[in-house]
Length: 299
Image (cartoon, rainbow, N blue to C red):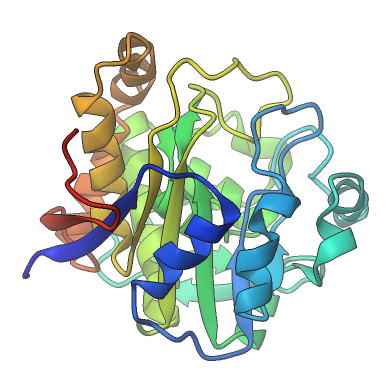
């Protein structure tokens, strides 16, 4: 597989998000699902809808999310819809909770070792393409969260999240946390699930990672650590594997003193095993060309 193109800018503004999409040269067919993270109630680090608004408006997209599989303000359709209103998403956008109603959509997992099927919200079938807007940061279970997490856990229904976390054992919220998969199997399940969503859209996807508010905790945490590193920038690609790999590489290359804390979270959870597995499955590559749109990549 030839090298993927990954675009990079150090400037983090709504206008730059749009520019990072345009340089991809990919016109997404409608209707466009725009996958965001709604932010758990109490979280201070999630990216606000005002920041995403120009990009979502430009593609005439519908903001999509799925319910969670743990206690909080997003584990039922009624509570999640209220949070989407409280956090301002419903004020600016048409919002679709993909798994608001059963049954789920079962996607095949080609080459899956841990999963043979992935369960996503059935409303995914209403869209012709997906723009994945990811807040790149740490994660208490996956090590880090980026494009691959948005495709996998992010698009999975509540039952599908249980299925991934348990490594294909259960889809029941009441059983999942007693059947959590071993860490490597969990990472592999995420990579497999992400691949099933990428395959479903048959190339009609684009990915943008915002490397800001770099906490070791995810936006799914009601109580999250404050960022431990300075902002790095925005990256975009048509390849989610290359995109996440480039973000991880930028953290390793950083001279910020907070990088060690961030990397401890990634490494202790074997986070890069998700990237390695995704590359092995063949829907992306770890080999990329970093293209800096504002001049040389090095200072």
